[in-house]
Image (cartoon, rainbow, N blue to C red; front, top):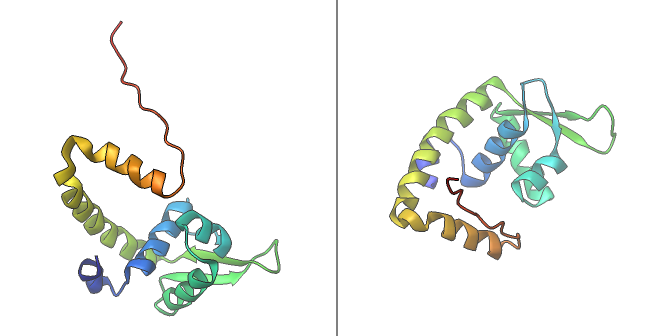
Length: 131
């Protein structure tokens, strides 16, 4: 992953937050808080803050005081950040598909096992049958 993200100047943690922010925003003007982003990406809030500062210096995100909550910091993705996240995301997705291809029909079971390890409840999949 590091090798894949190096041309974009991103670490895996930076990519995770940038991609997470991109998925939370429905438009460039929509801002989310650092706390919401940290929960969404399942990252430590302090680490999230530190990484966002680095991404801000690279002009990939913008940070500002939140209008409704004086304690919160609002974060938005910039046009450059959206472009970088999109390009890097396509490469990450392709690598992910290739990496997991070896699992074949066991991919869903593997994903379920990872969810159990993360403490999530697994919903049973029931195949639809023709009437």
